[in-house]
Length: 81
Image (cartoon, rainbow, N blue to C red; front, side):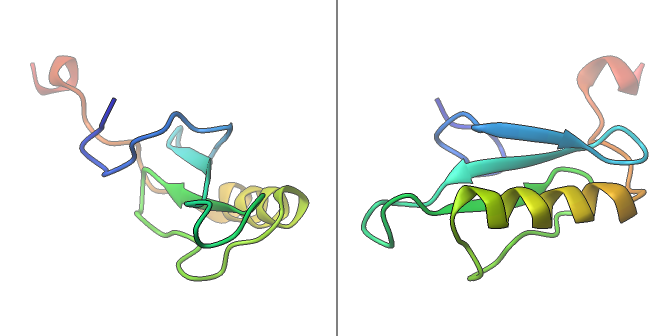
């Protein structure tokens, strides 16, 4: 299962920003660290970059971004009508 954003695994947690875009938390490749997570905003594209960590750290950072970000969610085919 692959999406246009390059994610291959379903997110393990999601937050919604001020305008409705998702901030998705997903597991990091186990080769980079067991039990490590990263986040990515589907609205503005901001992400955790090389700063990934355990779930409590990642949840806090993703939630902080969700509270501050006002980027709109990506358009869907039904939005284009």
